[in-house]
Length: 295
Image (cartoon, rainbow, N blue to C red; front, side, top):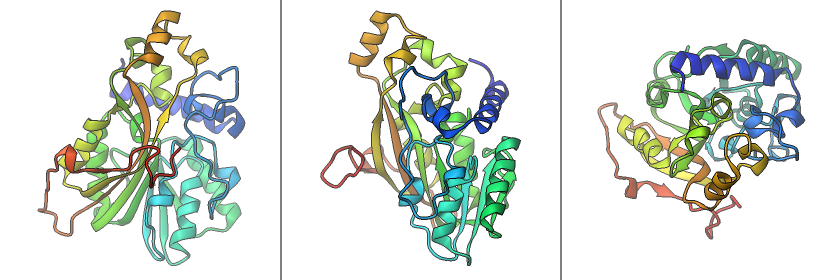
């Protein structure tokens, strides 16, 4: 696998192409980034169409959850969206924060920034802005955001711990985040793990669920909860590009799980508070449980 900058360049190139195509094309491929399957698969995306603030022009079909649904955004909040794309989650967040608040979208793909700004101008939103930059080095001062959201983006960044540190830095004390992302339980076959296309497709860059949650805990966040969890199934006609028929069968019948999770956590009131939770202390809503709407 390539180094960090090479991986970033691969993702930037792929998402530049995605910005130039339509939602239907994006939704028919794995996270919008891999070669289209021969059937119409909505592999990861959730349906935003009934969500207040939704704007169809800003929805490129690239998410793996609905983080704004769980983000507890209040009127007047300042919200940051990491990997804001064409602006969909920003516009949903803006509905929640109202004209009294502010929404900042961050994306490192120039054409996405341009597309998002165009959408904001069409909607007449003066309190939504889009900044070009890396989410592991945000163009934002310390202690700015009440809420941070992100939808299927951290898995695309090589240094996830650095992003989590940036989230901690830019949140106000007592601020919180709600982030949807792809994680693993078990290990991907090497052919998938080492492929640049699968990295850009939100799969090869995913890390173990336990590690993901532990990174959040180690940074000092508290009240960590999994708000939603759903399994992700890669269609066989995509797997066939990378694996032999026997390997496809073994992968589908094995112990490896690919999941979309939406994680919530809070920054403590006092910066020196650095609780280190055990994984058993992190609350989780199991998929298809009695109080879950994920299946």
